[in-house]
Amino acid sequence: MKKLSIGMSFIASFLVILFGFSRFYSFGFNTTESMEKGFYYQTVDQKTLNYGDIISFRLSEETAEKVHAERYVSPHQKLLKFVAGLPGDKVDIIENQICVTPKGKSIACVWGEIKEKDKDGNNTVSLLQPCIIPQNKVLAMTAHRGSFDSRYFGLVDISTVTKMKKF
Image 1 (tube, rainbow, N blue to C red):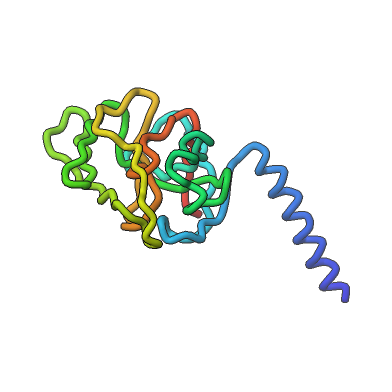
Image 2 (cartoon, rainbow, N blue to C red):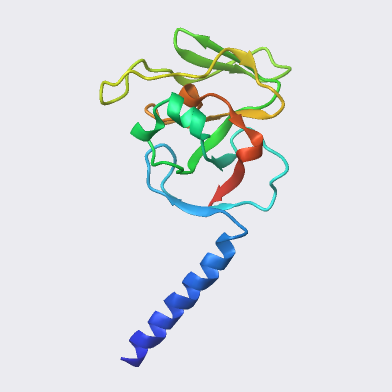
């Protein structure tokens, strides 16, 4: 009985510390197919973003409403994606394929297809447009073919992004 009490005390202490930590740092557990499942936590370096960095963010209510986000994520749920395009990169959409040409390069990377219907047969909405990515935005993608990412909700405001790392 004493071991159970000590164990419960340890768990309670851990949860209190974790809750206190969460007020200053972001962390979470990913259970979706869009990114590798597991525990993610906020990195110390939040100043620079690079290709492939894992980021967490919430869609604005306006954007969520436009793309029918409630079909794919819970209201106010944070999304976990990686940086596929940075400010200055060129984004093209060719035959529903997203092509990103990094600033100063001549070769584009293909990042996925914008599908006209989702897995449930609903029409999709894509806010992503061909552009040069502005200084305050990034392209947020995943490798998962059916992912709800920038191919639908468009570019993400850098100011809303938290850089994460897998534990």
